[in-house]
Length: 623
Ligand code: SF4
Ligand code: SF4
Image 1 (cartoon, protein in one colour):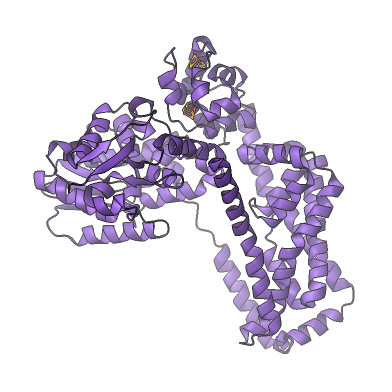
Image 2: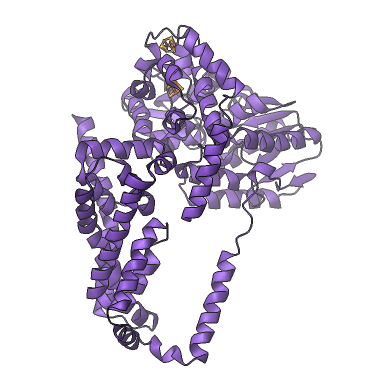
């Protein structure tokens, strides 16, 4: 984002804070209840890694400061799982407290984390015209709402469940849409309400009275926001209908999704189906009402993966080698990274394959393709009286106005190419001639290039296009010299701006656990963190330069580490770019091959690092 826009956004946020010192009524009530009700007994802290990090709910409520971005950011590390509320002797609504804190942050313009954007894109696609489909037969009063995750990971499971439902109710309809749980959990209350209401109203207008859900998140959303609709799970329906799945023997354990920890009839229906199949169910210490989060609750996995992983590791210990069966596709994905886990539809419809560890759900991007294929298959089916695809987008969630930048860029490009040809400058598009032309400007050309590169990080401009131009114009040797010089100066300028010129502004922008973690890591490991982040691109480069300015790392250490550890990527891209024009003409030179090889090597650094960390974690676990 250009600097001017960032400053404008910061000013807007600051103004909204200055003019709004009052908390949302819901948050005021929650904070008051927690302050007066919590006795600091520590029962909840013993169960929860988030509370172990931040203290008892009373201490969090006491220290809550709505104009401190760090305080606002804290609640986004809570999974909203509700275990604390269950174990609290005072029966406080603690997940409600943290959800209200998230909403407060969103109201104040602080809930916009880039880490959440993949999840929100996923949700937006789910509610889009391309992915949504409503098909209701004549006389339909009940619909099956499979949800995004099950449809994406297990489309065959959706088909099998729907076929079973049709046996007892031939007029059952189907709705592929998103329940809006991601926005709900991220505190986007208005958007969630508007989108959900539109879906709910449409269904009621069509005469729908009952929604059968397969996903616990959909169940929560329809139960808490639904109006005029009865909500049940397909598992209860299948258990009541007398479904007799293929028999199999063995022992499994069940992970009840935390969002429906109070839905005892659902817990029972799932166990009934498994027992009917011939399976023995052994319970884990945390099950039913005291179940734990899988790690994906509240989208914590996107902001603080380590905290999220601690829930998965707990489940792994509790499962003790037994296969986990759960009835949330998100939980399968989260727990499956720690211990063998399957969805209920896997074991119901492919029991032997599942117990042999051969039944797996699809992963992205195939989940999107599966949903589109599922939609297409249902759209082609005959016998439906009403069909719709969702086009509604509320005022607040309107897609940004169409940007004309790509078109302008294309027009400029075409004009430049035409200009080059008409002016006879095409002869200079020979790399040797281009380099000779640049050389004729003496020191001016490299000086301008270095200046441009130095300003790019400060102005949040992408460095890669400039690097490519540098490789073409200056060749593999001088290209590296000028590029690393410019990049180091640019990174240093941003660092100095953050440290001495605009500290408060940068601090307000870089809130959240990711940046807090960077700060604490630098306090412990100093320049090594700079070196690490230059080699492993875990953070956006331009923001990172500013972020280091807020830490305690000495400037000289920062500058030297930046210079040295940016060199590998710089060399790789410049060597490659220096042969780019030749490659475009179809000439594969040894330099081009070397450049490609170096880029592959540099790209492998994060992969090797993750493997190394994974092995370390596995060894620690084994010990
Ligand atoms: S809701 Fe879950 S993650 Fe949040 S504080 Fe309670 S137990 Fe911890
Ligand atoms: S269990 Fe309840 S009373 Fe005890 S520390 Fe937690 S919130 Fe406070």
